[in-house]
Image (cartoon, rainbow, N blue to C red; front, side, top):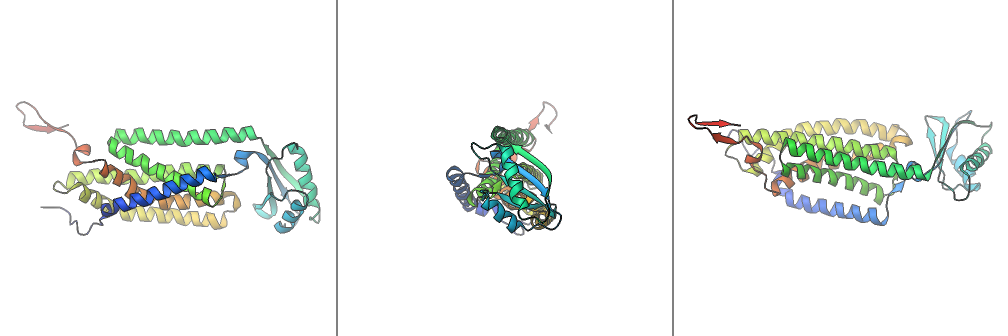
Length: 313
């Protein structure tokens, strides 16, 4: 007699192959874009000059951009920083020109459209060598996170589930990077932080599903592997949906009201949560099933001791 009615469980595994084909298409498209267009790296990685100034009254960003364009800085990134009186200007590095001189030219240009001289809050100069080091460190951080998760999941569950979990994380990271590449959204340190946060969020979702699969294997002795996985995913669906929804609400607020500084961070996490929830079901679990995951992989080994019947280790 079965303890669960499998007719009430959603048949997620029925769509595992179409989902994998769809995901493969997205991953390949992302990789093509990354290799052809690359990422629109911010000044954190490319180097350049960042100047924060304060106006005595609300600043008109269009006038500031026009003044900078007239002075030869048409590529300057101009945005509010905190209030409408505080403005941040980012300038890419110029070959053959000292960064200090660039800062002085920018201030001169800004003062032409300000009623009173602006107050300089901060001038940061990021060298290209620092940007290269940040790129390398960021890549190593992502690689270390993936390797650590691979070892953890393999030790806690079984190698098939470990491969599924890491495949899911690679899927999420590559497609999120592909989004930034296709639309040439600025990729800076805040976005890198969002990618690392996405890895943590996605693996947490995957571990919850894997734990429930193991629990269902103990309860559903006469169910097939796919029936057990479907039941496990269905039973965690409400928890996953509510967690994703409440997290997304916070990120939507940050996206629209958090300012330009964390716009990329919110974008990466909003998209990553959606793709991460999908991959926990159709990548992590599906890959484990395709690799031959079975009840015996997660249940204790039963042995028979001489003169004692059976016992479980």
